[in-house]
Amino acid sequence: MIDRQSPEFLEVVDLYRRAPLLELGRLADAERYRHHPEDVVTYIIDRNINYTNVCVADCKFCAFYRRPKHDEGYVLPFEKIGEKIDECRAIGGVQILLQGGHNPYIPFEWYLELMRYIKRHHPIHIHGFSPSEVVFFSERFGLSVAEVIRELKAAGLDSIPGGGGEILVDAVRERVAKKKAQTDEWLGVQEEAHRQGMKTSVTMMYGLGESDEDRIEHLFRVREVQRRTAGFTAFICWPLQPDGTEMADQPKTDAVTYLRTLAISRIVLANIPNLQSSWVTMGLKVGQVALRFGANDFGSLMMEENVVSAAGTTYRATLREMERAITDAGYRVRRRRQDYTLIDEPPPAVAAA
Image (cartoon, rainbow, N blue to C red):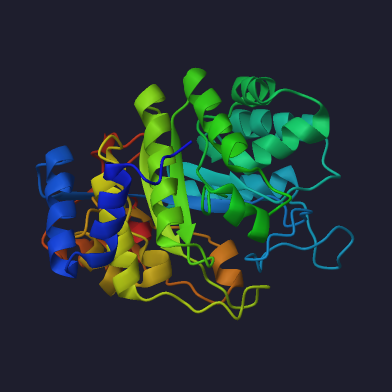
């Protein structure tokens, strides 16, 4: 449990609320340079493949999912997923982000066969199955979380993304996503993946009507896991995109809130090496400013993105535009892999088109 009355917790909440914006940015920027003293900003070329949109979690903030038997529900065939991977690799892509809904009609063997199929016919780094999906698999197929991860890893899964983190406070999760993994379950998947030698990322989607204290507790919970495992490679935060969801009446947060939240995340999460700028939800201009508020990574070219787009808010950029945004902000550009090792060779010329 996080002690919300501890001096450190109260000090961080006060800093988040009251520090002048530029002072908060300066503190975050200093922490960023402690981790990354060179003026380099990284990014990755990947593709987000949503293998199914059928889901029974009924999250109030999601505009992407469809209930079982809905006319627009789908499950992608292996061959279609393979085509998407080949298109990604053709522009220099080095990984796929593989995520879907909580689909009760897909057997566990399908997921294992998919991993094997990808590794056999379209080899690429598979960054897949959020902690919430892993918990769903565990419950649906009568396996422990450790067994689910072990089998997926043996079949070809390389790392686990931090999707579905939202706010890691049960009172918030119960209100907006009560059918999905709660805080201890979600973090338990991450910790088990780390125990099995997998690296993972971790996220926070804020703006769900939570308090400042809830946001800070989320960061403290993440920091605790990282202290035990050192398994998180990166942290990413972004605001709720409410349009088209059951939370459409929830006000959108502004760029200042995003920059304050990013900055306090960089300050609190001093044991996580990388923070991403969420230009896909905030736009390239705010994405550039984020590089002075704690972010050292520009995320992904994101050849395909469906979940945020379904809520009507997403930004697109070509490879050239994204690299230009980084250089115009005063940094050198480097491509990377999921584990943040750097890639030296240039991407295919088609990627810059």
